[in-house]
Image 1 (tube, rainbow, N blue to C red):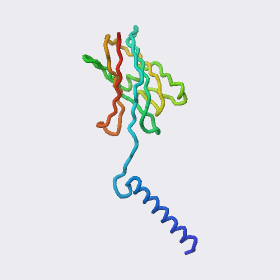
Image 2: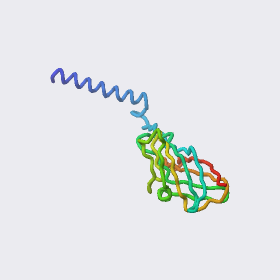
Image 3: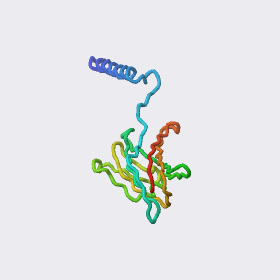
Image 4: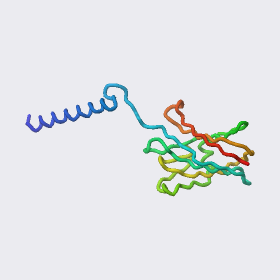
Amino acid sequence: MERVTIIGIIFSILVVGWILATGQWAYGNVIGPLVNHSKIPLLKITYVSAYENSKGTYLILNITDCCGPDAYPASAPIMEICNSTWHVFLYSYNISNYTVKVIQAPWNENKKDYTNWYSGFVVVLGSEAQFQLQLPFHLSPGTYHIKLFTPAVSSKVLAKQTATFTIS
């Protein structure tokens, strides 16, 4: 063989060895389990208010995605509204149908948060949006809790975010 080919093969073996060695040292995934250090998405309700109108209850939610991967947006396909005596689950198609307006925060107008029939609320990492929903039912005066359920890899780590609001 030519001298250049032999040097190239030796250099390639050294580079592959270096990559495998640093992978084992940093992550332990050459000999050992493969580890994924990505974070579970976390939607946070930063503001909530509601008032009654002739069509039902008008609900305003400010939602931000404060944790998780930036490769895809976080979603909340289930929302629960409850108090001590009553509760209702809104699924992704309800959330999409009842949403009348989505207002992006001024600092992230280039990121488009939205709702759809499959994912419910969809929020991009680091963005915040105000979702305005017209619920077709009236809520009695009292204090209510809202829970957003964010899906994860397994149902044991299903992320939940809770907020409280009062209707007078």
